[in-house]
Image (cartoon, rainbow, N blue to C red; front, side, top):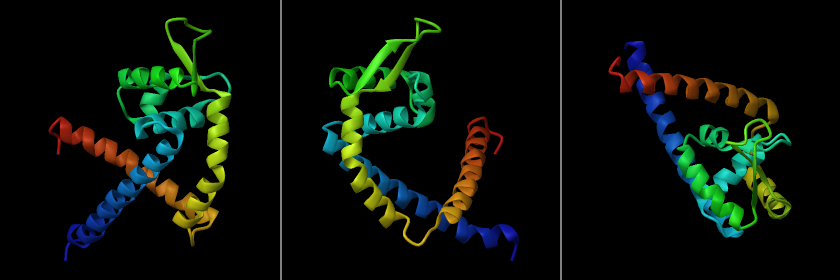
Length: 160
């Protein structure tokens, strides 16, 4: 049996596991979003800003890149989040043509309220895995993500 054939079943199982995980994470994100009175895409934008902001705010392009979505969609949704007082949008000190976004105290307070539930959820999701196992898994998944982007690019230009 060729190595490719031996890999076929584990690769298909892996892909279906990822599909299942993605589906479950989508449901979880919808639930978190509902608790804040926002949509799932808005929740992901809030989480991306929280992740990326190092005290100077975050550009819409950085958020779009993190979430792999169009920057115009980020702009549209962040304006809505600003009107809900969950985000602050300020001109960039480096270039006033760009906006830096950060979470408001209101958003941070709401996220803090959810933190106990998030910890319980994470304990359930990652039961049986320690920090070292998760680190190992994340390194492998990052490698697969990188290779997937390359494969997708090759497929789109007809190389595969």
